[in-house]
Amino acid sequence: MEQTKAKILLVEDDTFISGMYQTKLSMLGYSVRVASDGEAGWAELQKETPDLVLLDIVLPKKDGFEILGDIRADAKFKGLPVILLTNLGQKPDVQKGLELGADDYIIKAHFTPSEVVEKIEKMLERKTA
Image (cartoon, rainbow, N blue to C red; front, side, top):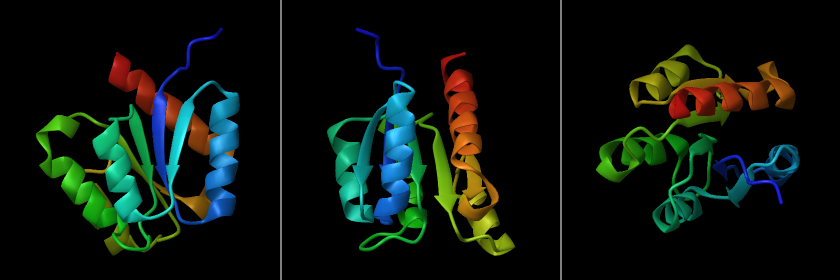
């Protein structure tokens, strides 16, 4: 049996998008857990630290900026790569995301799922290097 590549936590409330990424990443050998709101995403992080977090910003219960801030404030998540995957494309949003410590900021409409997967793989390579 092939070893799973890396564990990815996807926090995304759009079931179509989360299903698409979960399928694509699983087919490539990644272990993917999905949370559909911010509180569930934070709970999943507490259970098991993933190798990378794909985080939407506009989420029910707790938004992506809050989660990102909490991740960066928690020593146990030091070095955890977080990619914001969102439709918020305004410059202030991008700046806020990067200032809060996101490793990358991907605007959903500007990237195909394959391009997003490439970014994930590059990020994971840097982490293990």
